[in-house]
Image (cartoon, rainbow, N blue to C red; front, side, top):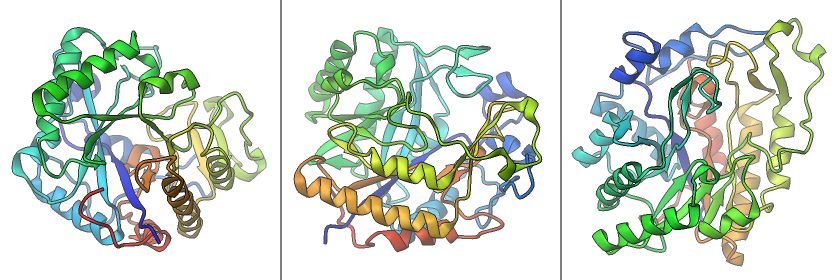
Length: 363
């Protein structure tokens, strides 16, 4: 049986830095949102606090070693780091520099360019803009230089010997075909390596946009397509709650079935899973709260999604038997594989149950 390689999205937000000091206050990191979270209804799993790794600081190299040890033991193949580039500015860069410069841990990684503007809503909407995502030549040249550096690292994840890079919202890139072709050509000319470019599924993605990329990655709870109605749960299930917040609630079971049903919605789509989702720590209103996740349900989803990945790989629909996990450490969005105070390593163990631990050193 073909071994599936889970790749977990990784947020490099957990350390104080100048840009967050300016926008959110001195010493801010993602942990501040996490600890301030409050339950919105009876039985709501908030605040969701870290377990064995504690409130870590990504300025410490030891944190990476501990995370890699946990991930490796659970069968995670590698991390997909969110990468931020806006013009001449590279943001949240210190952890990635540390990972690259030290050559440790010996654990595979790749980049996902998180190309969305920063707002106080933290979801790329245009209200209260903090930092605008740019697509000028300065941005492109900075991205090229950083990819050239990163893809020289032997730990960088490759598909059929080609470095794999994701773009979070490829549909936002103006003159997309030319922009991406220049990116490919520049990396090739400097490294002799041909990129394989994938995009993360988002509701704005259209079939014609896939002509410019090599693959698409499923990203639950993002849906395919967005115009289909969500199966929101009966509010009686989550009472009492504050209706003025205008939150919406969705069952974990509905998320699972939607993802599995629609994984073939785009050709060359890699399956994705999520242990849970709840972005209420980041949002004062309009939060998306998924209700009903358990480690057992997650294990069952991983098992089914792994079977899909194997089948798609064997049929030639995808180039490697990958399974993307949203996420390793999105603590303020409730999508966490890392140990929690209340459940320990239950979700890591659930991932292990759904996959084979035997993974080759390269794809």
